[in-house]
Image (cartoon, rainbow, N blue to C red; front, side):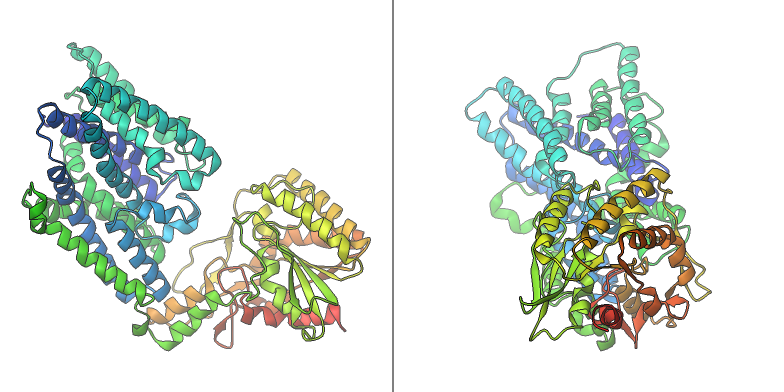
Length: 638
């Protein structure tokens, strides 16, 4: 096949979009679709290689795999080693262990399966995963493994014409499944081969069913339609768009049309810049994401511009120094020992496994760091809350099952405070009941993103009917539901960092009205039969407290007593607190204010006696929640 300048230019269009999107999604909201374009290109090239050689019975499966190994593994392995060396000096043990696990799965090309365990590709906390971008390499590699095997098996029984029809049918089936799976579970469907195969198969169809148009004018028109489709997709789609879905057809079909046209003279795709970026595209893609995560990890200001330029420079160097190595082309399985990139893969795998098995090489960190990080896992030991994804609500007793002296009701913040309430009582003689569910505040009549919450709240209201007369302690993270996640603004590092919150889109007045109406229904229903104590929202730090404290020690920084000002707390929680106070007054409930203890000096503390009181950015740890026991004691006992 002659060198395709259009495909090389298309690579540039894809990688630049992905890089821009990852460094700043606002610049190109749909830039993530560049990965879909890469899939189409890969499908076209792999199908052409396989079918051209199948037609003359010269296809060698082992040689095909070796070519892919020589192409993909060297850059990926070097990047993995560089990150592991970096992690030894700059990552906390928990993060280092996670990194090693990602490296391990990446060189095995199963990282896409690993990342289905997360919250979804576009979620903020996923941006701390150094090798998140390797999910697409894993999908491609899985395609490279299975596609030629399937074709070779079919070749024994069917003609090439029928095999082409099979590829077309498989493309339609994969697309249909992608739409179905995304609707059912989008954060898992995003990463799977089964939901992405149709994109590569469509690229293959561009080779299997070419068009014969001699007129350059018409070929240019077809190509231009493809270019416009991709550009439109980059700007009209965003993180909120369901993906992969029907909408994914837009950029994928655009890439298909560009490849199908075969037009080489378009200056948009064929110019010195696109030719260079296209050649470096694989290395740019592999190296750019760790730079994105690094900028976030070190809170670097204006990192986007420097990061993008550095991605291109490192991509160029990686292309010249690694990709251009001429590894031996081995054709027989008996000579597999001559495939040198496999040794790179084995070494990286062994190192990453060792780091993972030693809990992130924990032994080389100071005892102080380990003690601080232990607070991350210092949560409710009674396992009362099965977690956000589990659809169940599990009633849980702490202490004696009878008599029940209090009921703790609410979401994960209630679960975090449950033992603080329990500490008020003699658990050898009495106990408390918890009805907590992560992500599900107890607010009757409210609509939730997680539809299970509405059913769970009905179930909880039925369970509460059996606990008449028992005090109810209500703890909910209302701020997340109404105001959104808290996002700390960048501060001048020359000053002791105070944490203020960047306001997300101001909720409409109707949201507050509806919230107050539903809350009043919930509280007034409870107070008809039970004393109710409403805990005002806990101070939310906006950063992972144990990790932040440990990083200060790891980086040997001057220790700053990082805190949240009471003023900032009131700015974020003021409207919600006003509603809670009004509803309490109307329904005859009682208000418990944790800021009187945690923010008594006008600054909401993140640590007490050198130990974190949070296990993340907003959940109190078992150590921290005991600071509030006097508050519960004065309400429930005194």
